[in-house]
Image (cartoon, rainbow, N blue to C red; front, side, top):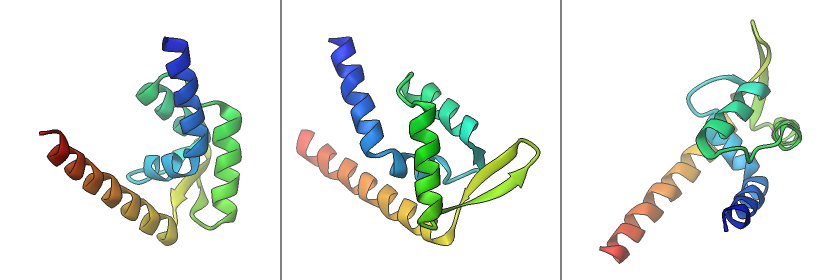
Length: 105
């Protein structure tokens, strides 16, 4: 059962990796390595390096994040457009939580 659940979690992460990375960058600039470690710490070992780095490249091309140099090397920060999307996603999540809370209580 645990393996089945882990596989589902991995598929969900891959499907929503762009949004997950944007949310991870909401409050701080992070390297690709730090982003991967963040997801491993939060969810277990579901984030592969290839998924994280290919997603970073894709959302950078879309103008949602930008590369900034720090002492660790290449790091990423949200652009204004990326921040708008994160705020919208977080708002939808919060509204969904409130709605589900009403349904379940």
